[in-house]
Image 1: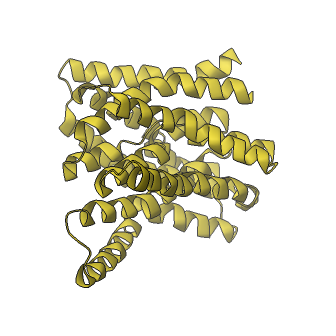
Image 2: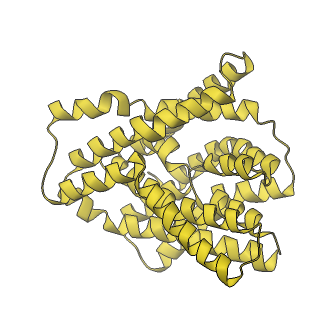
Amino acid sequence: MILVLISALLPIIVTLCLGYFSGARKDFGESHSKILNKLIMSYSLPMSLFGGILATGRKVIFENIPVAIWIFIGMVGGYLIVFSICKFILKNSTSLSALRSLTISGPAIPFVGPTLLGSLFPTETSLIVAIGSLIMNVVQVPLTVILLSTDSYELSANNKNRKINNLGLDIISAFKKPVVWAPIFALILSLFGITLSPIWQKNFSVLGGATGGMALFSIGIILYVKKPKLNLAVWMNTLSRTVFVPLVIFLVMMFFKVDRSVINMTTMTMGITVAAISTIFANQYKVAEQEMASTLFLSNIISIFSMGLIIVFLKI
């Protein structure tokens, strides 16, 4: 068990610290982090997902449909529940409710997943990362953009049409991203029985294999640049993302007597730290910038311990 914890979590800690240290030394800054993120989302992650899914095989994909369903329930269902609580019970603005919903329900699967899940579920990792990336990029991100962009004006009949048009454009835009269409294309090819031999897989793994390290290094830079301010909202966001969400999805799956392997993969995936996209949106729309940056900082620290507890508790 100790060896599993070390192999799964120590690389994350070391790489995050290196990124943070590089920021402290002024070797890298926020602009460099953005470049790394663009490289990851446009090139290395799509390469990793495409090659990984094609190497996975049709049998493994069909065996993991339940995992995809439960991750979808956790991410999309969680988003809608959190938004309803923030908007209608806590009376937050639409923009703040959207950001908090994305923060709490959207784990950083494309960034932390390859390193963490690769140590725990090596056969299924590419598929899990692809599922999480698709849900975030095709559902959560477009929905959040719509909610952020429509919060500044009243929804008259004309504005409702504009909102619908914006939603369509954002969904089309999402499907143009390599991180979205690459895994979909690979999934279609795999379902038709097309697979990659180890020789051809290397064409995708040379750059794709660097995804996890670059992503964690980039997060480390952001953690240094965004000075944290830890208040009640930040703690609630963090604990909801790292503790409450994986706990709730675990209890629901136990209630429905889901297969143990599905429970392990889904709970571990939903226990991953918050995605940096919330901080990016906060900066872009000038909404809760300090809160989102502080949540990113704190959740990356807390998640090291919470993910360790999940591994121990589930006996992965």
